[in-house]
Amino acid sequence: MIKFLDLEKVTASFEPGLSREVERVVRSGWYLLGNEVHAFEADFARYCGVGECVGVANGLDALTLILRGYMEMGWMQEGDEVIVPANTYIATILSITRNRLVPVLCEPEEGTCLIDPARIEPLVTARTKAIMVVHLYGQVVDMEPVSQVAAKYHLKVIEDAAQAHGACYQGRRAGNLGDAAAFSFYPGKNLGALGDGGAVTTHDAELAKVVRALANYGSSAKYVFPYKGINSRLDEVQAAVLRHKLARLDADNERRRHVAERYMEGICHPLVALPEWREREGHVFHIFAVRCARRDALQAHLAGLGVQTLIHYPVPPHKQEAYREWNSRSYPVTERIHREELSLPISPVMTEEEVDIVVNAVNCFAPEDE
Ligand SMILES: *Cc1c(COP(=O)(O)O)cnc(C)c1O
Image 1 (tube, rainbow, N blue to C red):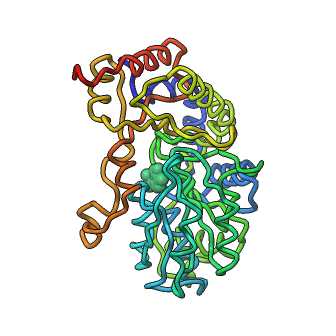
Image 2: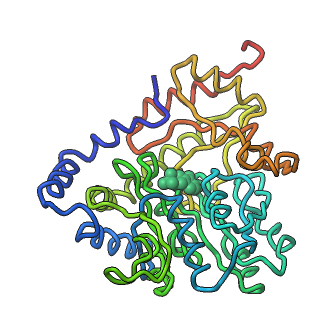
Image 3: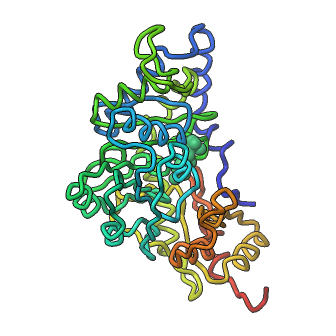
């Protein structure tokens, strides 16, 4: 049985160092807002190439607090619009509606499944205040045309980099490609904690200050509360874990690209479309997404051969009950992607033999037999 992602094996590959880090924090007697978080924030800011990093509790909070920060700074207000890809994990959209802002859904490009820059400008209105791009599956969005539209209409560019730790665009890393970026350190992400975690990266020292305050009850100094904040903190144990794992992130991403290259070379099937991979360093393959019109049959076929796959994601946000007010809308490219997408196993700990098994299993798919 080949797991979609063998997290037990991933964690074991960091031992014994990882447990030593955890034990060090356990023994320290200091569990929140301490040196571990400061050290990780400094390391991750340097890694991304930005001036500021603020650790928060999870990726959804990171996205939400960026928008909330801009609202507190007077950049946007309730009812303003944020352009966002229609095909994304629901957290991206939730961060917008949670702030009573309005998501304006944009169709993706068919080949990369990333927001289509050419479709952004027609969606801009007098109320548009930001473009939230999602580096979906680990591949960076083509930022140049996005930045041009943003500059023309004075919009903020926010990156949902929850799947793209370490991905590069023209030599710069995700997290450093817009005005602010949100990361998730959910255990299965390319840089994953042993629990929840998230971070905001930015060059904007003022935004970082506001986000840091908002994440700590709205406190700017002890017992001083300029904002009605929330409690959203990265804890010391997770920060120590992340700092330890960050040192190997580039090597792990390279390992993922190696598996992806083997898939790209090995998989050859008339019913299975391989992902469009634009720039080598531009993709960190959080997910290796193939497309197949007979997706469910392909998934069953692979499961029968012991290959576990997942679907990212079966139902787009606008077809969810949570957003029932949008259920009758039509985004054909988005809906086709959600109907056809299948995610093959990929991780830094997959063996060459496992990759061979997956390749052969896909190549012998014969749907008429299903
Ligand atoms: C994982 C993820 C999030 C949310 O991160 P959490 O830490 O689980 O809150 C947001 N956006 C995308 C694209 C994600 O993949």
